[in-house]
Image 1 (cartoon, rainbow over the protein chains, first blue to last red):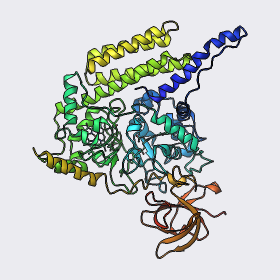
Image 2: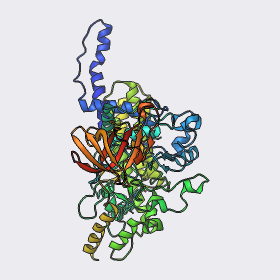
Image 3: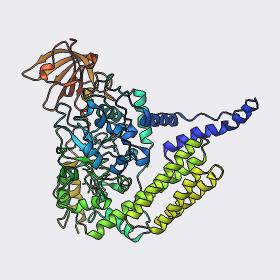
Image 4: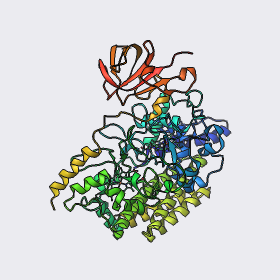
Length: 460
Length: 132
């Protein structure tokens, strides 16, 4: 399915295509632009939201939503991405803005582990009351926010002020991350988003990534990923599908969907958490509510493999490690682990061996690659219908970047070298299309064919 | 293997892990910095803005004259009270029950999503700070 975001560029650029000859006609002193139908209101709203997301600073410290949720890095940031940013990037305001030097961010933990400081339990003791969290991608939000108890946003599900909705999230983000000083006075340190801006931001964010959940099992071709899928879906072995139904973000224990639920899976009890190995202060994160109940919100897994590090505290760098977490003590002694154990006829929570951990991770790598291929094809197709060379270049470059993710994700697990070869061809063709003036269509179409060949290697 | 026992046990989990939370309450504490009347999705819908008519300190209750009548508010352990000083261009502060002074303009978010009730426990109360 084509995401709304790309539909917007399609619609808008199609309008431009219609008008293209008018340039020639204008040169000849004639007027002959057949105006195309204007883009529909929803597409216009999404385009407006996209502009706000990537360009609006809300009169604050220079950050935009895109500072921490950049499109070119799967709408999240990690230490490698951070390391490549220039020193004056507004992500680093705490390093060069004296008013934000203390109690706003922890530059050491940001650079080494990609962690962001948040005052989820209140702003009355900035020095001691804060949590350090990773930045979640904002993909597939249409599938990962709703719950019977209300909308769940952020790692603990209570990230948004007001009614707690995705629409309201932006207001909290501006107050937390965009302020010029720690006074956080609206109208002085930042301005709050208007109602119209919130509508547009919401529409844009809902347009990103998957619009619906997968239906598992897929007809996977790889031996190990296929076994991984079976373990994932097996409620007496992997048990993953209880909380991540169809590798998404909803739970179902057999009594109907619980929506995007919260659980205490014991991530905070992991020993040797990277950030806590340093000399920096990292207070315990108590999760949902103030004071917290220790639970965190279930993230979707289709988008996981290329958006690590994993969990709310970026505690684990690799997808294999994230799966292995469920075989450990921290999980099996947690309230969720104990409940699984109680419900299990053999009295075990989740017990996996090395081969099984790797198999589940291989499955997560393959479904992530399939999603990247879907996105890449969409971007490539959109690029064929735009007239603006810059827009075409942007779409082709994003397709190449997504393809790079596909390659890394498969190679990182030693999976499907034949698919990787097709993906390399696809990336080369997309890059050629970026450079080519006359043959970009030909190269783009070749790239689409290679993407489809890669997909055919992974799944029937 | 006893599948039924498994399902029943796991369904039991839902109460332990998901349940027990009042719907959509106690959202992110950035609420503190949002001026009275501007809480997204709440102001004009699920909150009451009005003047404090009376305050009963021993009982931790107060009465607010809202646009559609009086609202009897109970302040609980969970109620967050904030001092809204944004009109003075000063930072908003965490407040206490003592900040609830008769005559002050307040915005109250009743617990849950109830609207148009005559009495409710407050999830949060924002108090307009007096001009200097």
